[in-house]
Length: 321
Image (cartoon, rainbow, N blue to C red; front, side, top):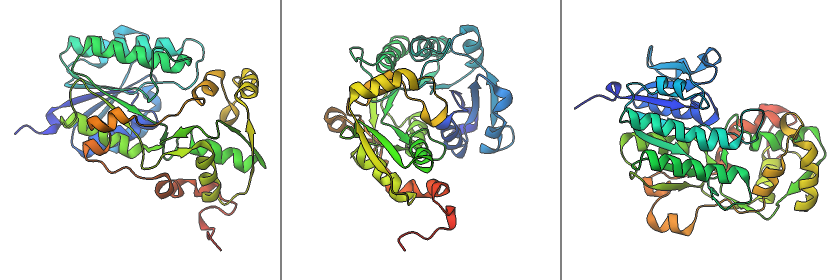
């Protein structure tokens, strides 16, 4: 029986939030991992994820096909995790999430590699959101080039170093008032470790070829409930001020240029108008985490392990007293 060490898995976006977790999951299963990133000189932290020589970083940019083709050379499996939450310069939704995904898929097809592609719940060619339309175009392009590709659509992903729970916790530390956009919009936050496990399972061959999975967490929560849970974890009382979508979109026209946690784009407001949960169709078909035999971790169980740094007295603060 062949060892996984004979299998080369190339991970595009391996240095990102989800990518780091995927690389670790693959290393634990003894795969050889090639992390294809834009700045390999800044991705040295991936090396300790595996044994000596198990992880190798290479330069690749999805906007340059030649670099992508070089990165997939001799690969057995190709994973595309690359995505952006906001556009900037040449990094547009279309260039990265549609044409970029197509470039990776065509390169994978050229070398006969299996493919796993990560999209997002809400991907829809008819969506009013440019982000969601580009995700849908990426899915279509991937399946056109590699019909056997497995596609994963996660809901909003949480975990250490995420741009979701950490963002709201950081805002709560700085401000006594938090704007609430889409307070009744439903989400199904999914733990990054569970998504990484699902991707590694697909590399193992446990996921259905050509299928689209929707990955949601243990609970369906409204946006208000999520922020309230974060505030409870970090032991901070803050006033939540609901913002109508029209006003939020007006503010986002200016906040899209803001730095860090204050950044908000009009397209992100559009996304918040729609629920982000696993569909009944995916549940019925078994195309979920549970269908892969993975029991999702809850936000309540995981978030306290890393959000403690936002508490007034940090990790040594006693809760509930």
